[in-house]
Length: 255
Image 1 (cartoon, rainbow, N blue to C red):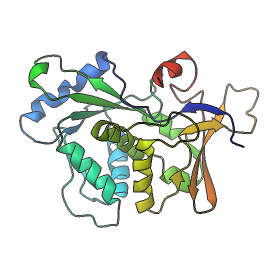
Image 2: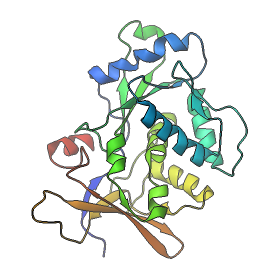
Image 3: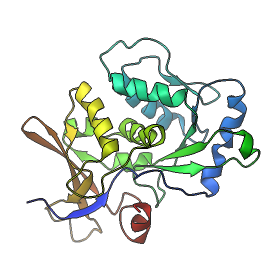
């Protein structure tokens, strides 16, 4: 019997929201004139977090020269030196030369973001002359809350979170609607994990972890399952510490 379903992690399909943070995709405006690339990282992403994201994406794609340029644009030059995921490389290449601008923004510690979330952006000026824009909000601190099996952690990090959101933009893919499904988007991401020999995400919805937290602390532990062959691996985190997973804000987030 499956444990009782709680909440979802990684965002659902693109949320049609226009708010101040999403308008900041103007950071890409000047770079658009000088490059054909469509994925940009905002200046508010610290060097440490930028290097973490680059490192994870290099491992997943096998591209040792993957990097963000000084103007924030993503470069995917060079040949893979390790096996990497061909599907991940193809997704990033398609996104980086596609019709939409995708801006990566640091949303660490925001209460309305759990791990990653993508929202529709808008240009403050000249929107009619600009391509459609989307903002991927990344809560780097949420990923720091994860514990569990090393194999599961390798299959669920900030690189995978960003790829999940980019797949929503590029493929208009859907997430699961019930506990019996993994969802179209995670099907795509699981295919990438398979290429790397990593365990596959077994559930889209996380569930309650069956152990008690210290009564002196306000904690609610949840877990997420990954599988490879006949073995199951777990990720565990405190849903109280991870933003957007409890209360009315999460109900609004997952609609």
